[in-house]
Image (cartoon, rainbow, N blue to C red; front, side, top):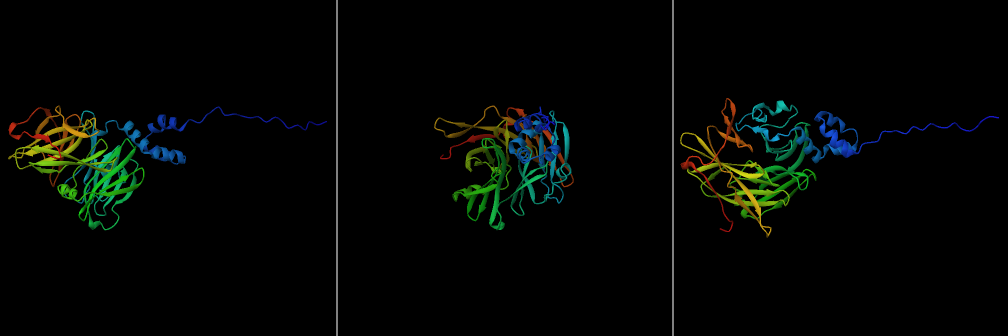
Length: 372
């Protein structure tokens, strides 16, 4: 008699369990360098989406570059056919780590230096504008990933005039946005691009905005509290306005501001320091010595949900220096000055001191009401 029953099958159960994606992201992937991360994008669609997300990019950048405020892209003001953008890195004591041409730091950089400028940077991403074809790009220089926005204008470039542009990360909606103020004939248009949505929106403004914006052309922006701000680089001793573009509401903000100073004109730059909008007014004396005065503005919301601005009383900083262009202001009160010529370029680091400077060159700031 034969035994026809089948033999018992041995079943092996795996004792290994798959880790949830959020644990893989938070404990493994975010700690890897950029090159292995790029290779891991091909593991699955889920990993590709996770590693490519704006949140992962931002968290990875903050972990690997905690002192990102001391890493800058410096643009040369000279007219040159060579590279005019430089990568600058300082350590925690402001000693020089690296100062090289951007294309040598990231060899895959292929934009035309004569027509392309950096209009903003955030969390390791650069926003570039090619004025020859009126085109905006968002570029990650570490991974060499480029997003062509195909805008803000696709055709009839000669009919449009770019006045101001900026770039920032809007944390409330987890999105990177580009904001532009552009003239088209007699009308000012707001153009906003969403990196998450992948398209541009536009809206016209009233005609009187055109006259207001005539003083603004390619001004350096400051991004504070979800809003891009611009101020004329050169002002006279009279009332002026800080212009803003709220990237959440996608509408304009106006802050009336009077800056009184000795002399015919002053150069002004806007920065974000310690989370506040900060003005740097620079006046030059007869022998070429420059005096810079820094004041911060704070925003207040009253019970009626209306917004108002005030000048911070603890932010009066002053400094005299020799140099050409005011490049950057750090939160610590140190700042960079660009001393350039046709033969060479030199960056100098200075430090502000608290309190007033010479009385004859004292600068006063005054906010006034729009209806005044």
